[in-house]
Image 1: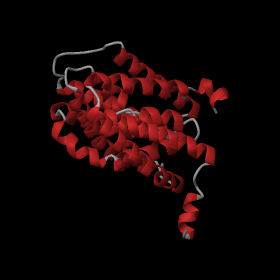
Image 2: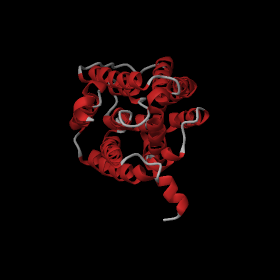
Image 3: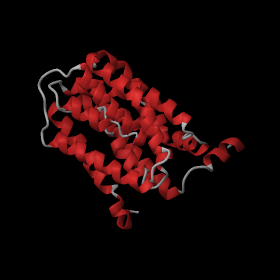
Length: 258
């Protein structure tokens, strides 16, 4: 192995920590491929419990932006652009504020906030928050702005947009396409904000190189499962996995799980 590459991989975390991150990104990728969302909701609580949240967020953003590009080709043809565009604009304008908070907030506070956000959003979905009318541009913009704030703080931008689109009348294929397109476009602004705040480092690059193949393979397997699954299975499967991840990553459980 060339010395430069060896020096880069020397920045990786300890083997036990790396194994946890690989397991988390594999599960996250399977859910992302299947549902179009949920990867950050699985990976970030687990990753932020073993490495610094800024490094976890920067690593995940690189992974999710680059590895999921093949999903985008089909998503842009199916998504509901009248709601996706305002949401992307709102997210792009607010994500720098979230990145600024991430650079300065306490790690333990971020972990508790992250788990709480995921659990609250999941409760709204599970207990049946729904709407039947097409949302207006202002509502789409506001939801996107909130998602952008969360993306900057934690890369968990899914809860607002998942609640927003999954609560509507669109079929799972359109919801999934909306989410894939939104994450791809909003990720551009998040990348710029993270770059400005200095979140990218050699350790982040090393982690990306190790996790990217695992994430990519898991996404492919998850996407194939979506093609064969019934629409009724779409929400329960994704929700169950996200619930397990959020609860198991609570700081309260650290003495038993870490």
